[in-house]
Image (cartoon, helix red, strand yellow):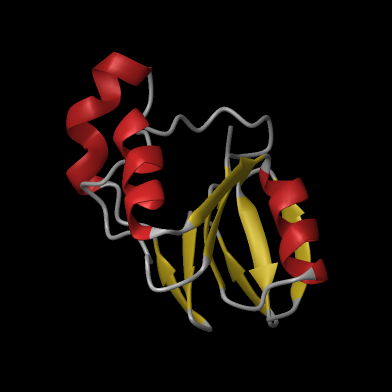
Length: 116
């Protein structure tokens, strides 16, 4: 995958611009479905990344881009599940996550938050 740009509210991958969070699952790009995680919104101030969503676990490393300011919360159970599955979980601001993916994406899936 070729990351062409990232700005608050959008990301461009392989010539296509997405104005929503994306999930990169073995070279397939899909929209992050936040519905299942909305139940945690009041506890975190926004919809966090939780086990309720479709997490792309079929990888050795899962990179989570936590937004332009790094504000996307991850529920604690997500880290425990990654450990249980033997998946390295890396969470960092989305621009840094993109840089990491550009450098080394082998065996890596990602969830990239495009706002906050």
